[in-house]
Length: 228
Image 1 (cartoon, rainbow, N blue to C red):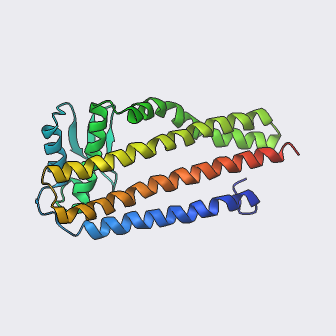
Image 2: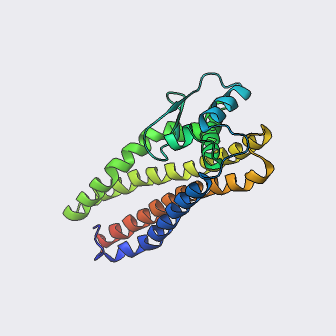
Image 3: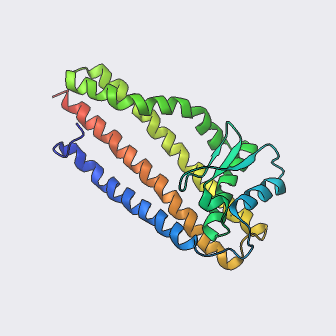
């Protein structure tokens, strides 16, 4: 099933390598640009708050959260949560990440359709990701093809959710760079560095989607074995 002895596991090796590469790029970019202060001297929390005020998004709050690189926007609570190394830092990396999460808040405020669809689809995808593998492999072990098919359908929903995530993340990054530059929160010479930080972060989403897509192909191959 999940063993290296299973030949279908070989499908996942390229995605695993890609995932390790993407993670190393994220850590390397953040480590490098978290040591370079932005010329504006603003902290991540100040950037988020000022951008929200500048674009008249009055119903979103900014607060610190625990954990390293745990930054996110919660559309249900309308809250931007920033990790300590972003909330309190005036580095280029911190400003890029804070603006990126603010970009999600802007998407929400303006009714950006991919984000709206992703938010509505989240409960279904969450259930699918939790139940897909238990159901599929119960069917695989006990010869229940219906269970395997249900598992594949559920996991397909989770893969679709990750595909929806890509345009949402790319758009938030573009918004972040534009907002920072337009509002003189980063200088012209800092734009490329900010883009590198956000591009590295986006690569991790691409890697996760690739892994899920190959995992889905693997489930189809395992399902085909039961037809032999």
